[in-house]
Amino acid sequence: MGIVDFLKGELLEIIEWTDDSRDTLSYRFPDDDKEIKNGAQLIVRESQQVQFVAAGKYADLFNPGKHTLSTENIPILSTILGWKYGFNSPFKCDVYYINTRLFTGNKWGTSNPVMMRDKDFGVVRLRAFGTYDFRIVDAAKFLKEIAGTDQNFRLDEFADTMRSRIISVFTDALATANVPALDVASRYTEMGEALLPIINPAVIDKYGIEITSFLLENVSVPPEVEQAIDKRSSMGVIGNLNDYVKYQMGQSMTMPSEGGNAATTAAQMGMGLAMAQEMTRNMQQQNATASTPTASAPAPASSGLEVLTPEQAAQALGVSVEDVMASITAGELKARKIGNAYRIAKSALEEFLKGT
Image (cartoon, rainbow, N blue to C red):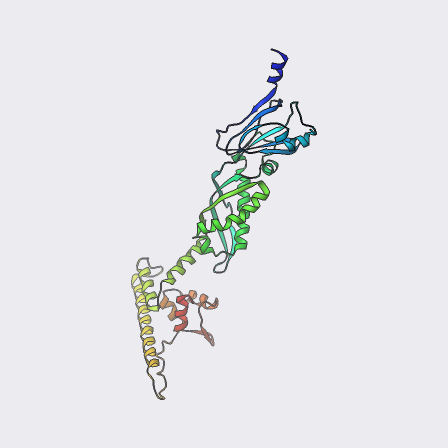
């Protein structure tokens, strides 16, 4: 073997890399301590970029194509290595291939509940999970902040870091977006699209990565909030007190009586229905009286069901007296205190049932 053949064997003439792993983010080309020949061929395939690093500094970046390495197309490297008048001799530098394809279906999720303030339910704890897609858009920043000098940097080495970052930004976005918990728990697509422009600037600036798709697959709330949502939904379909009592009766018929027998339960339901029907008749009579003009006759006296005691309201609603008193104390049900007793107007009770 001649000296020329020996030198050729010690120089890199073709630099290329094919990836069949599907999870490699960056790859440092193994030079085996060889130098790169002047005029060597650099092959960059689609969905790849090549970053040169020399003397600890990021040099030229190459996009897809076939490149002949000469002074003209590596100006930054020429400056770093001090080639004022071009070069003809071999040179050394690190060659990093960056995989710029789209990495899809990456999972994220909150390991601990996320706290958010909701105008309807107060402070609510949420758990959420979903998927995201991303690609590398800034090779130098990605190598500097994430991959470093790793020869074969793979997705599983980065997944935990990316997941933590996304959860952090997701938590901050929920805190500032002031989105109702009901919307977060039901409008997954809109929430993902709204959070994407909030999350992206943080990860691009930090890691040189762009998130192209951010999906929420599930958002769960505590059981007590779920019960409140279900109760509010049920109340929303109630038209008036009579219908509500019928609804309660239907619910009670499908559930076993607690702390009592069937006869007691039936009696309570019948009392509640009768009271509701009586109240409805009184309301109709009052409306008819109000619509009939009279000269000076005073309005007929109340039948006694114009107002209810907490006990009567509890029977009509099929709930406990403690529940009624709790609603009064919380200001949800309007009542007038006379001495040590409370009285509830039927109009206030109907407003409470309608949620107004």
